[in-house]
Image (cartoon, rainbow, N blue to C red; front, side, top):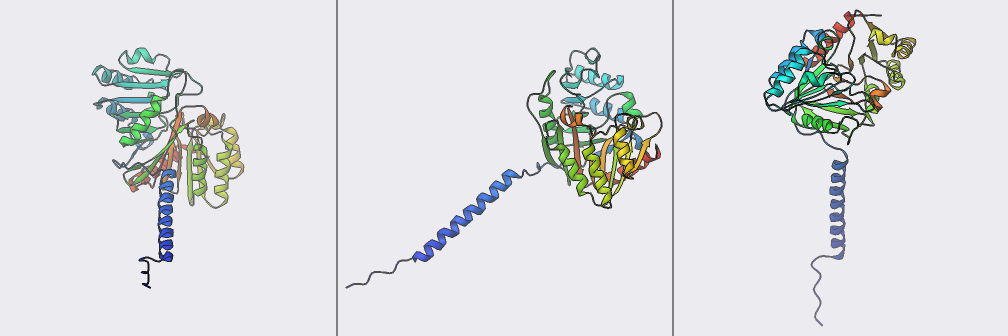
Length: 349
């Protein structure tokens, strides 16, 4: 009887091969799921952000006017209050040149702005719940200016404010998307939290009240601080953030806080008392100018800054926003050191 030929591949080999293939497919699927869950930073690296503050000698009003005057394609402005005649003139002039200009502002803070801007400016005066408190300028769908300064002569020239300026198309597109959700009486849609590359840095932006995890993000930054936390805040009423700052000091972090003097006697009084009772180094602005800052600087290398005060309304009702930028460059750290020295020089214990 003729012997049958042995199979080319043994049953054991085939089973092992099948198991190997299944394992490989599972690994690939897991990797794809992980990438879908954890959204990577948008791969745009156009320019390292620049910091500007009137307390370090920057002429904010002139800088904004120059940016608007040099616009070629478009101007988008989201602002709480605007009374600077020079800025208003620059916006009106640009619209008369045929460049599309869109302004979204708080209706109560800008009662007569429509006539001043003229008919060629697209204007939305927000009357919805909460304040339209964002302070963002976007030029030509790429140049972004984000900070704490309103467009009043006092805010731009006298009061303490910090502005971050950079060129980033992806960030500009996100801001434009956010602007499209803001209407006279309501919001239509949400734009929450996004991450970008800005030069060699990571930049995150949170829009409020859309980003429900925004306060958690700030508290996590405080928890991760190792050496120093420096906070300059116009209005602070949130005890959850104050508790995190106190805990940071207890674990050995050097904490310094500067509050606006008028606010510390009013809306921020309870927070000021709490911080003092836990021996946090607390300073108050001196002089007549407001300390209008809304920033936190951690370990020299991380900055949180924007339009949002640390209040419940800022995170749950107002149109507001903040950036988180890290790691700061040498130039940015130097600017923050100079700014912090200027803030403390204008403050009292």
